[in-house]
Image 1 (cartoon, helix red, strand yellow):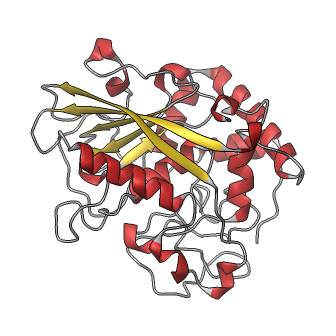
Image 2 (spheres, rainbow, N blue to C red; image 1 turned 90 degrees about the vertical axis):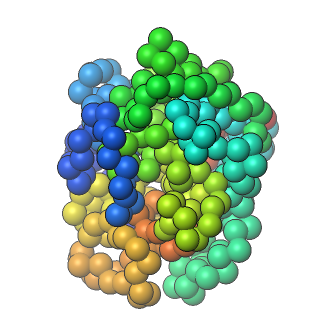
Length: 320
């Protein structure tokens, strides 16, 4: 298990790590052979565009580490219920996913973040002691729909801006906004980490990978709603489990060091090539495995996530 070292150099190095190269410009290419989340690449672009963002995120990280190390911290009023506004941007009937499909995504989030998902019992005994119930629930408040002529939106936040044909976020300091659209470039989704501007805060998921669909449809093997679970994890300040670097750190102590992302459904035990050759936690939601291959968070991830919701935390407006 990893030892957490907090310093500006470590944090900035994490932010600057390069992931698999992907063209983030608008694209009509939708073929997705392997999971790809663009959260890290979007963060790198935001850091380049706004020099003050690194300072804000460094402060958030220092606050997070302070609260993670304090076992007596309390959430604001003790409970977190996340109101969700879903913004659907569609050109075709297929992209204009149904209310029922959207609700199935909310149901998945509620199960995954309360450890009531049916596959939670598949966690290997090696990791069962650190498997966590985040005890966070999600409540669908509104579904906004808007027709568009765009074939894909890319990752430059145009879908979040009415003036660019998208939909502005609703009350982003107290509401999770989820944009549903065709992203393109083989990207399943991306999220904004705590610290970014509220004008673009939230999560984006490609419409093909929202909610639960047939295991033989176009969305397979990303058909169980875990794209949103992964992206909401980023929105709650969780990093990719391999730290976006070879044998990198996700700043969580109880997740094994991964040499890189995992894809598909690796056969357990899958050994890391990093120091100590630990068994990798390929079933963690913050890896890149198929939806049916990811089904747990850890206590360390819970502590990290919880720190943003405490009084003074980056998302304290969500405490109720």
